[in-house]
Length: 268
Ligand SMILES: O=P(O)(O)OC[C@H]1O[C@H](OP(=O)(O)OP(=O)(O)O)[C@H](O)[C@@H]1O
Ligand SMILES: Nc1ncnc2[nH]cnc12
Image (tube, rainbow, N blue to C red; front, side, top):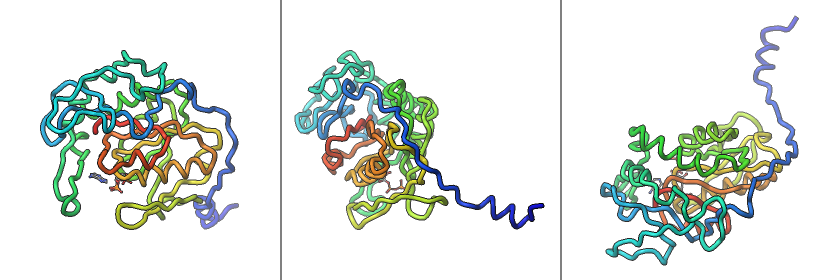
């Protein structure tokens, strides 16, 4: 008969998954919109520090409206000039009035956590069930039926948006965590931040080579965090379909750091 000590030992024995090669590559990779850095972003016409109830515009990087100009309202396909079947010019997301509600639900706190930082606080978005649901719905509408098998969410705020997207599109959720948080065997990736470095970890065996992943976070600033997540997934043979964030801080040029990896954001 097993002793209690033996049972406890078994319970805490580390299970090392053996990665299996799977073959469910992302669907329609060639036809899908490729939002190349730094091309297009869904955006609202004014700063998020003020309430936004204006129509949505699509800005095309540096070619977008300048300061003080009324933004041009267009219905160009996202990712233009790359042709897109799924995100055609009549794509409803581009004229979606939900974006303005999402943008205005995000609070901006000046000088947090240190002087000079305009902190984009998504906790106020979470207090608004319509805006929160709209956020998830917009991502789900974009990623359903794309054969994405993994939603990789980045600690901590990617853990808020990633799981509901994963559930809705029928994918598994994989947490990409800060160091020493995951109990099993991990692979890790160091990355540079504005000041200093950090590390991201993922459980060995959580994903298999050949899977198709979406990387989710609340915000892209310098792009260091998303780049580390992409590297971790690609190191084990996973294809990263796209990165999805609620907010982009374009002035920090995170898109450029992502290279050719597509990035989709709701608010910029
Ligand atoms: O594009 P980057 O310059 O890499 O910055 C973006 C990252 O910064 C924030 O997380 P933070 O590191 O503050 O961690 P937290 O979510 O645990 O607060 C944000 O949620 C992103 O993950
Ligand atoms: N300005 C900002 N607001 C919220 N999260 C951030 N992460 C990096 N920069 C940020």
